[in-house]
Amino acid sequence: MADRQYDVTVIGGGPGGYVAAIRAAQLGMSAAVVERERLGGICLNWGCIPSKALLKSAELYSTFKRSEEFGISHKDLKFDFGKIIQRSRDVSDRITKGVEYLMKKNKIEVISGTGKLTGKNTLEVSSNGKVTEKIKSKAIILATGGRPRSVPGVEIDRKKILTSTEAMTLKQQPKSMVIIGGGAIGIEFAYFYHTLGTKVTVIEMMPMILPLEDREMTKIVQSSLKKSGLEILTDTKVEGVKVGNEVEVTVSSPEGKKTVTGEVALMAIGVQGNSENLGLEALGVQVEKSFIKVNQFGQTNVAGIYAIGDVSGPPLLAHVASHEGIVAAEHIAGKAKHGIDRKVFPSCTYCQPQVASVGMTEEAAIAAGHKIKVGKFPFRPLGKALAIGETEGQVKLIFDEKYGELLGAHIVGSEATEMIAELVTAKALETTYEELWRTMHAHPTLAEAVMEAAGNAYGVSIHI
Image (cartoon, rainbow, N blue to C red):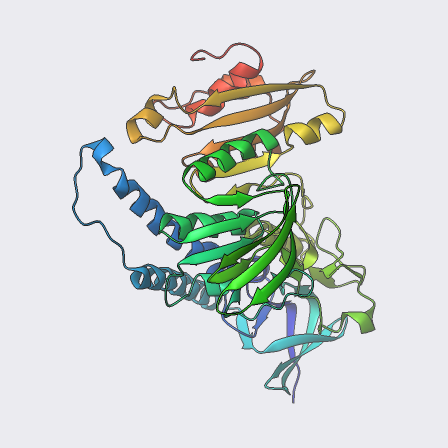
């Protein structure tokens, strides 16, 4: 079996891996991707993309239910759960085919199978337990992703206790569901199923859902979801899970112990890295709590071996993985001008109202010793928000008091996940409140709230 040879070989074809390979090819390097399933990884096949298709269906259904507000009447409003699921699969299929096209366009070899390192510049690919390829590579990028963690002692059987993969492909809509974990994944699925009529209970051990977000902003979301009828139990710890005809979850909270039941349960407490069976131990690649340790360029402690995406640790986000893939490929080519800044990335939750943020929360800024100015502007006074019937939420900006630099930005409301891009750019460019305030924003738009919030921090907002 003759060895294949490449400049860069990527193990894993998700949003980190395939992007890294494309960037390597753009820089004139020969590149290959080893993938045991389908290109696109969890994100395109079972995560980001198909889940947003599901959420759009729920959002549309919710909008139709209040269509009288817009002067539109309807009779016998209903939905087809199977068609909603199928549409999400069709969307996923279309975008993964797009990635396959990009591989061909950029002349990247896609090798089917499971990759394992045999040396710092060699690896083998196996399928069905047999070695099918041997590869020599000047550099190797590990982009093997992650998988859901579970509560200790609780087995994810994928029938009654589900991961997000099963939750987006159910044949029948469950009448009730317990969601263990109130982070972004848990809350997005809670919104989807609750909107379509499933009785949903969310269990979160922290004092608030979305515990990484700004506390004040999280309160807005939590209040909105509870008002819609979604049951949310915070400060609540799972003590045990019993599977029968229903799933019985025993929990403890400041109010005492009780049992929560559901037809199914979704495990959404976090992700662990897929760092096993890669041959890392023999090469001495450092791993900590399932995540491969890397520097700002994605380099491991072993020369020539890089790691990107979920397997390299938080933040566990597809767009972070893609950015890391670009940086790693450029570093291999000797063209990396900047490393990865893990403090400047957008965090988005696609429930309704949407949640988006970048940089420090108010609590983190104070804890870090900053003297801060905080500017807020609600959606309610905005002409665009009134026109489209989406007045819930606000923009909150946190500035350094002395220099006016933007430290953190937080949005709750319609289109928050689109609006955050302006503020990620502002944060990356070390923008000040005055630059945001004096940047002309189109009217009428929701983005005017950004300009007004910047002005509010220093007492010059016009419409509040």
